[in-house]
Amino acid sequence: MKKIHTDKMRWSLLLLLTALFTFGVQSCDDNPDKFELTEGIPEVYYVRIPNPESADSLLVKAFMDNSIVLVGKNLTSIREMWFNDKKAILNSSFITDNNLFVTIPKEIPGVVTDKIYMITKGNDTITYDFGVQVPGPVVSRISNEYAHDGHVAILYGDYFIDDPNVPLTITMAGNIPVTEIISIEKTKVTFRIPEGAQKGYLNVKSIYGTARSKFQFRDDRGMILDWDNLNADGGWRAGKIKNSDPEGISGNYVYFTGSLVGDPTVDWAEDDFSFNLWGSANGRPEGDLFTSDPANSTLKFEVNVTQPWSSLALQMIFTPWSTRDTNGYIADGTTPRGLWRPWESSGSYVTDGWETVSVPLTEFKYDHAGGSLEMAPKGNYGGLTFFVYHGGITGTDCTPYICIDNIRVVPNE
Image (spheres, helix red, strand yellow):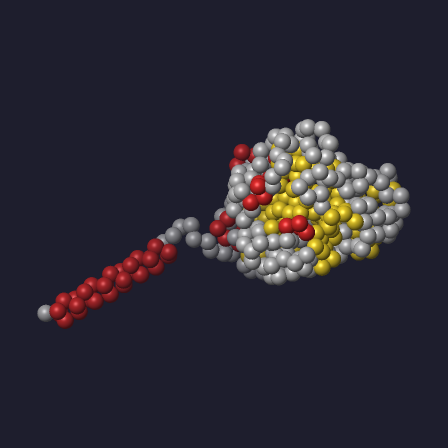
């Protein structure tokens, strides 16, 4: 009886699976929304933006990487689409007989014809007049905001286009031109700082427009510690100061060096890897070290790491002016701070000379072990501590040499 019952169950299951498979096939075949490449020639009436509320906004050109809608008939006959000489990706889920949604390729065209090329199922090529706009340059940051005259620096951003007929140019503050551009890529330009360079914004001009940098070269706004005129004397630890070997970027700098272990929970060489600025201890007036809104500000400093760094985090913590005579906030688990672990992605970190580091104050939201906290609120920050400690990620034993200068807080731009 048991065997007969089991056989009946198997036959029932088989019949059920067969019925479900048959139903699935029929459902797919009967799906009226299923895309099928059609015969014939497409016709484009116009191009609009995707937002239905602005469907009457017609386009004759658009920027790279923007989405557009072609409106016409028999658009399901299009199997390929090209903007100038760059192929677009077509998604059949966004193609109907009358509408075709597509994103303009983000690669800069090599040959500009200002046309869309539509290749049909029958290999006919239909053209439609449409211009692809290339954005003007975007200047996001520079490798070293305090680079000396004559030194090589790298600008980072996008759309650095060097046209043979309209070469890319860079102008420093004070209308001082850059006379030696070493190399140009779409997202970075390597150049030599001209003699007489001044503090201020840089301008980059290409065939597609002119852009001002989102930073100031040699920016001294919001300077907190430069180790020449502003130091941490009177705190728990004032830091070890020098100005040579390596050469300073602008006079004196603080440096950290000694042995670090890879295990973040093991004790560390605290005296060799920290300084504490306590406003009340070194004669600074009571009040904030910076006045800009933390939600729209960035901590910046220059760093030169000459020996490999491969464990623990540089922890940066602002404390109230009244906090002094104790450094218990270093590992209390409740005080938000920024963590910088530049070795994390590659396993080890050194710099090629002095480089600028930027840490948005919105990232000051971690405890000493890398756990998440609420971002530190604005309010009477008269103290600042830098120290290499914990960070929550295991590294490898190392003996780094870390030099730091020009610690400042600047408003975001």
